[in-house]
Image 1 (cartoon, rainbow, N blue to C red):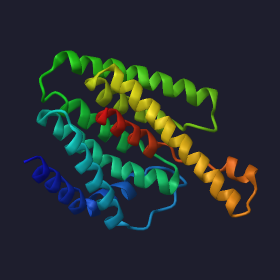
Image 2: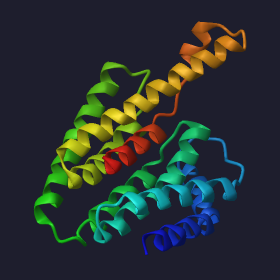
Image 3: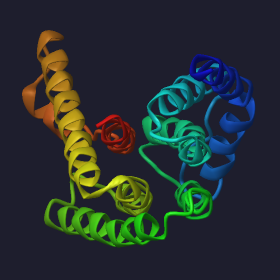
Length: 214
C-alpha cells in the first residue's frame, strides 16, 4: 500500500509540473527587477514528484501525509525561483506556511501543533540573526522560509528541528565547497568563486527532508 501511494504522489507531482512552473514564474512577477523565467514544466514536475514521493515514503503517519506532500509541491516552485533568480517570493513562502498551518491540524495533536508554532518562531529568529550577522549569506527570502521549516519540523519534535536546520546548513556548505572546487578546476579565481551567491532555500528545504527522515 505504501508504494502505491508513493507512486500516486510521484505521478501527481509530475502532472502538476506545468501548474507549479507557472506559479513560480507568476510569483516572480511581483518582484521588481526580476527577469522572467523560461518555462520548464517537466523539470519542475520531476522535482515536485520526487520530493512528494520522498515525503510520502518518510512521513511517520498517514495523517501527516497531506501536509508534507503540500510542502513538497510548493518547494518545487521555491526551488525553481531560488535557483534561477536567487529569490523566494513572499507569496510562495506564505503558501508553504499556510498549507502547514492548515493541514497539520489534521492529526489532531494539539501539543505537537503548538510546539510547531514555537519552533517556527525559534527557527525564524535564528535565521534572522544569522542574516543580520552575515548579510552576504542568507537572504530575507531564506529567513521568511524559517516559519515553515520550524512549523513542520517542530510538529515532529525539537530533535527534528535541530537535525533539519543543521542538515540544511551542512548541505549548503557542501554545495559551496563543490562550487569553489569547480571554479578552481576551471582555472578560475578563488576570490571569484567565493563571491558567487549561492541560493540557500533548496538546501534548507532539503534539510527539512533530512529532519523528517530522522
